[in-house]
Length: 271
Image: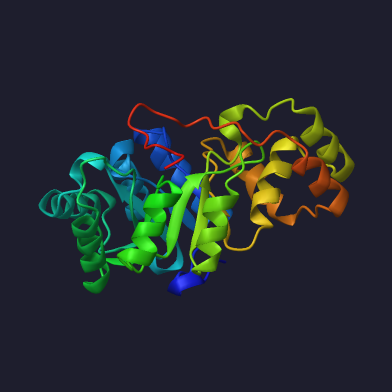
């Protein structure tokens, strides 16, 4: 459980992109039945209605699990953000989200105004906590040190093939947790000989090794997407895996320069 900045967010969550409709609803209900207590969605995923269907039909009480959602980069003006957030709450069939993020920065955004609106959601109790996603270090630093927004979490691409030390070290300095999306590198870890060898040693899969490597890190959560019950079960079981120093050294030796989520609207990552 991550408890930084007042969060109570399980380290392992269910990512829902790009699941849609009935597939998404069934996946969320199934994950909650398996013991997941952290669901990640976003307006841009166009599946908040499906997640809301799961929320409405799950026997698990809403207060017992964490829901993260996000506002898209074309809705960062305060009025647009307000409308987007209200729609997210309606679609999710919930009175609040546990964490609400700016999904991606926009080059023409008024950062201070967008963050002030985000803070207002928290002050109204509509978002228990707030944060950002995909902010390069310079923008992250401005958010935290100049504007002093009380953000609790930064969601970024992070996995065994991609080093995010500058962002993570800055976050830790300020008591801000990290959520790793694409924690399994969008399937590119399948057949990785290093991970498979570590997994064979522990009676686990390479994917479970990669996931546990993230979950073992202080203040880092991971949200692998999994629609099939077999995948959800395997990811959940990764929490019991025990990696040793030899395993961590082998993982450290893997290449760490492979970013897989770099769309046309991405910011200048080196800024």
